[in-house]
Image (cartoon, rainbow, N blue to C red):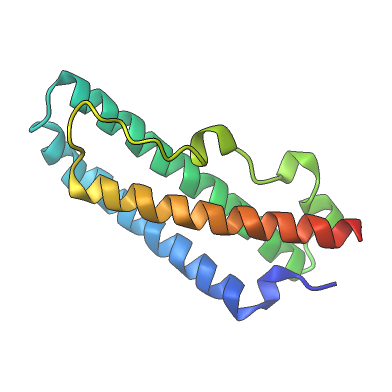
Length: 136
């Protein structure tokens, strides 16, 4: 059975996720605070919500990718990694791409939202492929 962690596609996805994680951390630590001051009360609340959405996506993505890496390294079985407890989760928050429209969000958070959404969709499809392989 093909384990995703053995493929170049997996490695590119992992590297992309890690780089986005670092970028999001830097944005939230240094840029978001400055941009928050330029927004009204509702805008600040929306910015905080969207920053949490970025964080949720990246957390779910990295957890799933690290689980697949553990399978590849022989630290756990594919069946364990595919258990319900280890499934990519958070779809209610992570798949929602509905923009909040009270105020214009800064370009930095909009970029992170778009790229983490695309990456979450890709990992969601990878999760489905792995689960389908396990069933057949």
